[in-house]
Image (cartoon, rainbow, N blue to C red; front, side, top):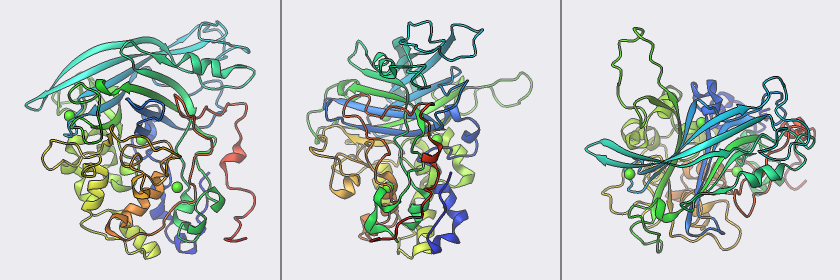
Length: 482
Ligand SMILES: [Ca+2]
Ligand SMILES: [Ca+2]
Ligand SMILES: [Ca+2]
């Protein structure tokens, strides 16, 4: 499925290039590849054009879903807990968390079908398998390092939009999508279900980018390795006052409560086998609850993917953002990727003392998305969004802040933001004046995004699944100008 590397210079670099080619956080660490239903793939946080007073978040799990997957299709794991966290003070500790738990019901255990042809809605008995979920809203108060949590169930029994099996099973799949969009009592809008994977990247062109830089874009023969693949999404639109530090809406970009940090995690139950372990029952905290263990997390795209070395990747998934500077700071300040880019392309990327990357991704940019009122902002891997910055008037610039569009990555992350190109250029030294037009040749998702909630494109159906859409094109790339 991976494209071949085509730049002669890149041929020698196959082994080095592998870690960058998989996805934003798709199967990025050894342990999580064995547990796909808990694997965070992407997290997005932005201010939507049609919802200026709300924080919009999309968190995706379960990577690389080939749509044709009967008789058992992808779904959230009833045994895991899925989280979206918001830090409104800048210390990397959650202040508000939304916890999603799932329950799957099979109506007819004697059938092998997920649904009978013509299933029309969640109440229709033809829909044999129905997954539903609840949301618990947690508010955290941190005192002397201890988390005092208050929990409140804000939704229960809401339906998950089913996997899109095909037009015979679901003649009107959109009815399920519409039925899965809910507005809660506190004004929060939610959608949970299968969607098209909005991430886009091309491994081959990433390292061929220098050769085709005048043609970056799909015309440049970049091939989206995630085209035609689905994911499972939680999309939320939360009124600002529910997530800000002072419980008020944000009056403008300079407002003291304007910045929030967003990330998502997955937890699994801690397994205790009597007598099998001498470890203290409640060892060092690895999650926000002592009976559960965090097994996956995701703030900024590609951090665990290309910054954290293999030997630390599983630990990164298990630790919390407030410890990032202590545990992983050195990998950001001296990123291996800068040395790799230099070895391959001689782009003259600074290889040490990369405080510019630490600031752009982990501390926030002063007067833009740096938390206010915190001394020497700690380096924490959260997506920092200034809720007071209005959405871009026209089409978003895929380069976000480095393209002059302050409403995009790394001030939050929109679906359209080309984080692969942005991060390659930032690692090459963009913020230090070394502007190299690196890119992977893919400048947008294969499917257009929606202009309204839930914004992510609909999933490709199993019936319409097209393997030829996911492999290298039959014809060789057309050379520049050809
Ligand atoms: Ca992941
Ligand atoms: Ca906090
Ligand atoms: Ca790109």
